[in-house]
Image 1: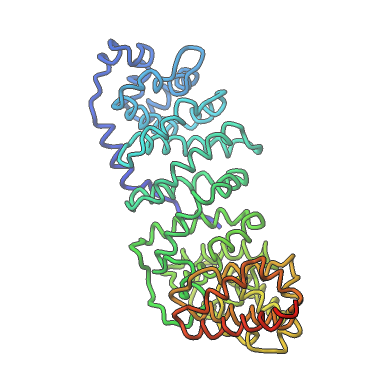
Image 2 (image 1 turned 180 degrees about the vertical axis):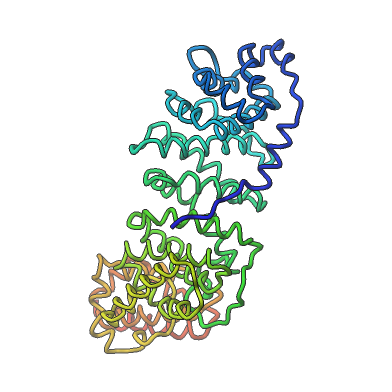
Length: 478
């Protein structure tokens, strides 16, 4: 699937234009020892000239311009020499980005340098002030150069393994900024870096920094900041169409693009993405709100990548949050994008095939894995518990009771019935398998159920009382 061409963010273009227009007292900088005569000659030869003249000059002295930016046997990088002059550093960073954009052969020559990023990486930490242009301009140059480096070799390079974590850390401060212009720059530059499996793996390894802010932007777009909100978990509550949280269509598209790129590592990330962020619920909800075909296309393509590589764990969740019905609804619309239609057909067929073989146990397990409970039929069906209690405790080394413990540990202030249902389930497990009480107690379930006996909600108090009653039934027999 091809992505739309992305224009440079306005904020960045404006900043670069302002810096290009500033007069720099170059001769004074030479006299003060901030730059060398050789630096100045090379700068003047390419500064404020036509692109074709710039290209010819640089291509005629590639080694010299590599040395100017990254240093070498002839001397230090101009950035190292002028480190105390922020006006010169800013100017050089803008010029450097212009040079590698205008002269592709310079990028190729730079990535052949033994340590091309060395003068630039420290500048990402120049200050923590978001208004400081130096880290921002550095990230723009490095993003362009690292993306060239990533594309130039089939094997991960040590220089990129060192640079990517630092770049991701800085760019994630932009995606967390309240300024949508800075968010836009951060997200667009992240997208330029996620070109290889290795760069995506490093991005995922830093997911608290990298993925979490992007998920928060998407949650804001749905109007639901809290992942435990029932609006993200198959609630029947009416949902207002449209985007919320001040998230513009451009930013939404770019965030979805980054997560689509990441989804090509579906096998690596799928289960944790769901466990940490309830991703299937979030994307199903976003599909309902999607304002344009281009956003719908990315949502479906990402779900396709994740569900097809994690069928056992994620298909049950997708069924629980009613994704098949939503896909059926989408299929009835007049959609024209061929990639979108292909993913829609594939997803629908995959889910249809799964639902034909789904058992009641599968439905219950999917509900637990979704992280949100509702009064679906299994919870109050004694036969279900007689037939399945042992399997619930044993399946996947006790993964389901661990998930039940995780769910019941939350406060659920906006949806107290989840706690009532969880207490109901604990009671049934104790009733059917009293000899396994210790397993449940080690997960903190007995302590938590006893705490809920004093909850403000009447249904929670009643179900917790019944569950504690099942424990007490066997206490005196021990």
